Image (tube, rainbow, N blue to C red):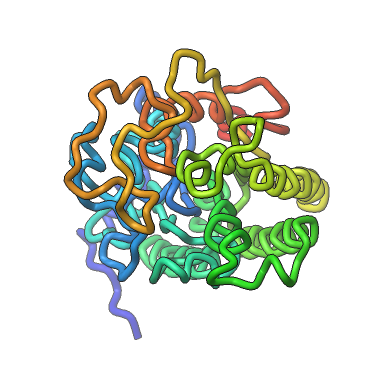
Length: 356
């Protein structure tokens, strides 16, 4: 039998809930009480640091422009989720699940893991990672903790229903699975169309798992131009488009199947709000065909440890061989948050989703 919380503990919890969940006239009040992040290295902010994997970046020059230095973010500074959290009005970034400690879980948790995928086996070629299924299980432990602290299932459900759940994953299911024939036989078992269909079907089940555990506001991301990543181009060679077309065509197949699923979930679950996001921006004036740091770390696509990066980092789209630089993360975060384009945000952008 669990011990009852002491009066002072209950008071402290009540204060936390009052600050994070109840209406306030304070201008600093976040637009939603909490923000949960699921995904891969585009969102990871430290969950891979202590794992036996090549997909971790808790070393210089990563974090050179982040106040806390190398935290495990796959960038020179903030990632896209950091910028979105800022725009939503949170005073601090969402803590990684692996380093919660005394962090305030009522504001949200980041479960994302570098090299992780929709499929459990994705990224195994790089070592240990936290697949989306396990990220969802980790979230369930957080729900249990919140419920225990609040001592009220209804209050927990009310809180979770107001939070935004960000799910940005799927790139590794191609980069570190389907197109990695040295380690996986997926491309022999599925055509690109069949693989995209299977991936989206699996993702839809995972979204339903989150829904069945209280999630009601979903920001679901499509895949970007994975075939334009410098590492992919250097490893395979560019087509006349300047990118590796088969990678981008595969991403399009995935996106074309994901968008109708999001629409169908909105129809089937009227008490929930799902939106499809695929933010972009204008790279004019930015370096798009090179990396700011010297590649050679990880599986070859990450920054070489302790190498000296370029000095004009704000001019680069790519930081390393596959991950955006902070400058580009800022641009696409703005798009995800406020774009009026149905190609980039449908039916809501993040700002609109927060108000739903």
